[in-house]
Image (cartoon, rainbow, N blue to C red; front, side, top):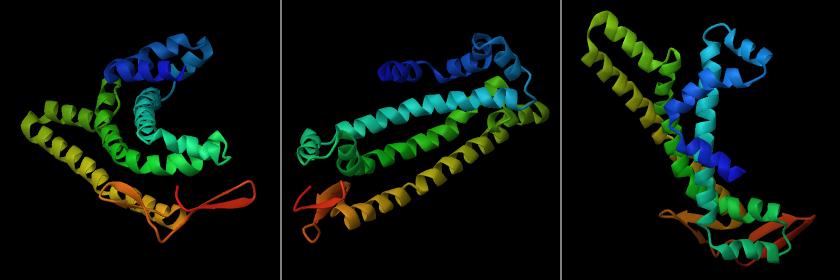
Length: 212
């Protein structure tokens, strides 16, 4: 079921999904719900379908990146956590996810930039976003080159600012590993720091290991 959900939203073009959410979804819902969506005052009648479209489209891409980050870890780490007596949920919480987060954070930064860029598709359902303002200004002033260069610059600045802050969560994760699990990142890797021992607290007891 999860694989079908991911493949459905990942393999359909974003513009097609935007039209499906805006035109088809109200017709598939019960009549009262569909009429309620159609009768929303502007801009909510267009904003809600566009928000759902971008949300579902981005969620499946993030799901794939998180899955790839977890699967990139050695399989023995999961077996080691289960052999220690941890449940599967505790193994993911204390062993797999903390290490996978450091792999996943950089691609998630790219997804944050993609949300900004993908929002330009919302003009197709009459959302007054940056691209629609550029089209309207070009029709009124006939200065398409200047206007679209300015829009390009605004998109670039927005994406650059998101990319600039990507080091903040990575630094937080490094400190989290060093203080709690005894790991520290070095040149994109996470290595064991011999000055610390990794401790996991579960079931009211604290288990201290020489290595994790």
